[in-house]
Image (cartoon, rainbow, N blue to C red; front, side):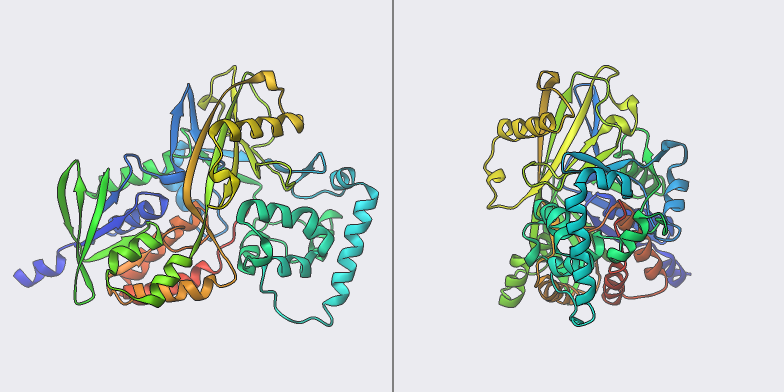
Length: 479
């Protein structure tokens, strides 16, 4: 009888980070009934950049978020989880190109109007040259620039892809082609041309016709995950700072930290980390390892700035979000919260969120809130979206080290880091910053489900990390 009780005893799982990645892992593990789950979060609120916050009568998200997925079963899964707390919305987004709003998916009429005949001919000629070169150049593209030029031609690259990539991730000539494979759904210029002419249609794999959105703000998605974890006797603890991870013979035994000024400790059979990959790496390994230290220090991240411009007008856009390739505009995308659910905003006002990224050496890292907001307002005015006297106020949010940047050597550096972490036999990694994988909320949810399923199958964490890495390579981001 005693042996049977020991066999039925739940394994203790500690999850670091209460973003969607960590909460999804906690939710699926708790759902099995075989694990005692405790999620630990440094901040006072859960959700990370998938949370929502209140400001001046608005419920605001951290930029544009949607619930959509091409991973089989995941969107249905999320719908069953949230049900009536979701709104189904037709997706509306466009590109602002050469002073015009261009339909997305691309349509020949709007593209020709935006570009003019001369530019259109130049793009076609550029693609024709690229098409002919394919017969002689069989070398695989290594950089983002090579990947796009080989498929769309240099004029198209210079007009759209280069400036937008440079604004979001930095110089695309030293950016790995994996970033293009993840972000650009069309396989090449022929596919784009066929779609322009209406011969080939977009599919759910390349364009989201609709998406789901939590009616209370995107932050309700992580809230629902938390509610389910707690309903299954799991815990989600906020405001805790992790100080040390205890190990015996390469196996984690406990996680120690401080909560409200008091020391706390959590025993664990498995540790699931969704926190910043360099942070968990330094918690795990205190000894000097030059190759590992250099690899972890050289992993690159981009920082995020969100500038909320509050407008004295009921509504500004016809789209939920719009992309801006042109380099003379500071923002790479704008998003109107009211397009998601008007009930989250005052009836007589709206807010435009301008988002853009930067690195430590960019001027934006030293800019004041006033300077950033002024440039955003000027850009919105110059593009004809608002008038300067309609601006009521602004709010600036900065988020550091959030976007993994795939430089040309990122695979080699990441392999060194992951191989070292896999020496610890009972740790798992998940999430965007936890796995150094550029992905969306649906992918983080899928990671949690995958981890839970594989552990139930008896797959070891060491092998599971390798299998999860392979799965992530097939993730696609569909705008």
